Image (cartoon, rainbow, N blue to C red; front, side, top):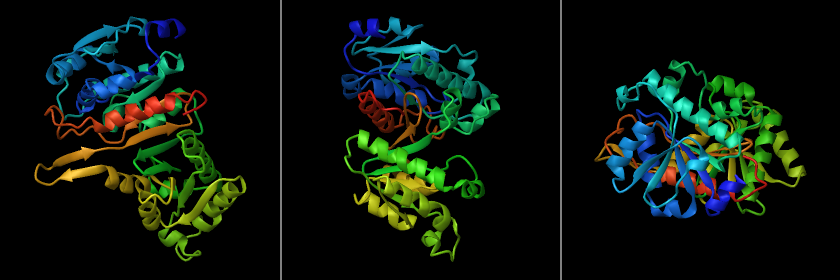
Length: 353
């Protein structure tokens, strides 16, 4: 990378995966890279199918052109160039917007694998991922429950977590892509403590000196002293007490219907959610805005960050939006935010995400 850096300025080099090409991933990636505010803070490349990306550039950024590269050394950075690493997808032209297909699923997966390879080799400073369709990827023979699990598997990372970030609300999850019944079994004091520590570390490294962390209860009213379950008292509370003994400002278990309104108001700097929907629902209520008249999302904001990886990975925190794919109305705001977070975190050389 040192030789390459002599040709470029000091802006971080970000690799952006195109996501599922039947969805809005390629569209929002291209729209984001056409923005001057993104070009001002980063050098970026799109990892995906050259034909698909070239078509999106022609539709949404006709004043830009596609520069196909086979290695990072081939990159050219100027205001009218979008660099694309081609992953070579057979049958790309047969993909139809809004339809699940094994070709699209395989294309999305191969883009992610290439990004991981580049990041592990130190050729890019961070990875930003576009939305994938889980069924399409699994139908294509890649059996993972989501992006986070793909990254963990190919980087051999055992202790990892999903962090959602949007304005005042920053949420880490103890469990993610498992059934609710399975999630309850996985709530242990060690897992909760690990996530409290990880959240505290990342909040400090993004500039919060003494983070105040709210830890959600699992059961209604955080168990109400054992009336509605014992996990809060036996597993979550001991983890919080241990964190406090280590100097972490942790509080809880706090009933989730109280925790998240307080966090949105600025009382907590970060929250620990016990399971997927407990953290995602308040997060998306804060960052997603539905347009009743147009029957589509007016605004979609929020970033997904994977903690624990040997490199930085951020992502949009929305899906493939098959219902609006190909219509040109997808908002790139979440993609821009994901790039901004990747840039901010990449400046912390000692930060491991």
